[in-house]
Image (tube, rainbow, N blue to C red; front, top):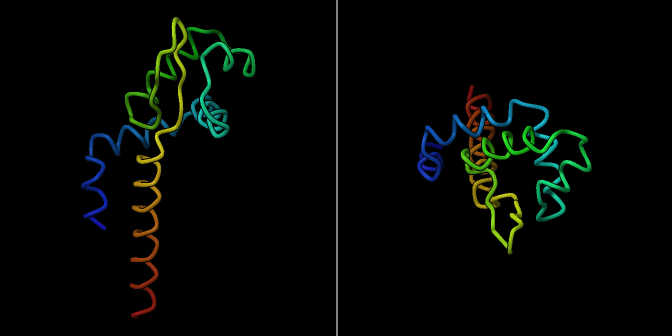
Length: 105
């Protein structure tokens, strides 16, 4: 289980968990489930201001949950699947370890 955490350093893991604690950021991540998206499209869907979306995008990007690429004057954001898979594996290991401990009693 600790081996999996080595792929995500503890500061990044804390940042990820903190970034997942806001409903706006969860909504933004859900919008990215369909692929890349720009802030202007997130603004259209959510009705939130560009500055508010940019604030939340920065937190998600700093945590490593999303990445970006620039195309001309537009920046497109997408989920970082490697980070999400590392979290999924860590959670799976946590669950499996817990099940194993219960079954051995």
